[in-house]
Amino acid sequence: MEKTEGSESATATGCPSETELAGKADMCKGCPGQALCRQQGGRDPDQELLDTRMRAVKHKILILSGKGGVGKSSVAACLSMALAELSQKVGVVDLDICGPSIPKLLAVEGREVVNSQWGWKPLISPHHGVKVMSVGSLLEQSDNAVIWRGPRKTALIRRFLKDTFWGRLDVLICDTPPGTSDEHLTVVKAMKSADPDGAVIVTTPQEVAIATIRKELNFCRKLGVRVIGVVENMSGFVCPCCQERTDIFSSGAGERLAGEYGVPFLGRIPIVQHLTQCCEEGRSIFQSHPESPAASALMQLAQRVMEEVTRQQTGK
Image (cartoon, rainbow, N blue to C red; front, top):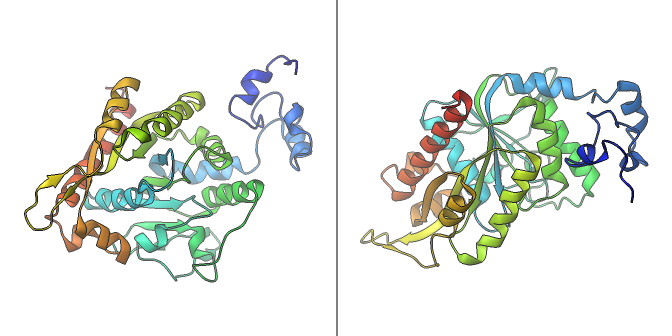
């Protein structure tokens, strides 16, 4: 297909709704918002409300993973609690529409979200007062399957971001689905004008994970998303009896690739029995087992994340 002038820049990030080709590009054909984009001169009518919500949030952090099964949501939940331990006001928005696990991890499962005159009021976790918004809290039963096509999922993601009344937050953690999909493009586009701090990429330490980490890092590069750093989850097993650490997988893939791409390596989170129990039971590792090696590793992760976002913000 022959490119028209400006089409490359318009399509580099997907929907051209904020460019001069809004409502006019080939990809706009068939979109229900095509006429509105033409009338609005490219400005999304919901974007102003979303930007207003995000102005009350100091730091916006995406949690990404190249594939499922690496413990991304567990890291997101534990990171939120660790940041709260550092006296930060924290919120978590669970954007994993088809596999929401944040309500279980942060002990708000079974509670209903209230839609007030100010918007959806997030649930308050009993662990450190973390605010939580998830599609899991909108389902009548937590085991109901969410079988939606892409447009419906992306519409709900935008609604979560623009209609949730977070109030003032120091940090908003966005737990995304695994991989790179329409949902990720929607999040990045919606958050672009709110200037998100960047992404924390979660991986496991095996060599087999390298290909998926590369895809995630390249995704961030192409869309202009800053990478706060890479964290290795399930990095070694700590024996509950003698505290000896054993590498049950190969190790170091995340750290090597972070060095190759020139992004920070944020640390390793070991497999610890106390941590897995806390995640399964919706308890805080910092309250139940504050001396655990996992609690120490997660606290160091939170400190590194705050150091990186502060450094990026100040340019130092």
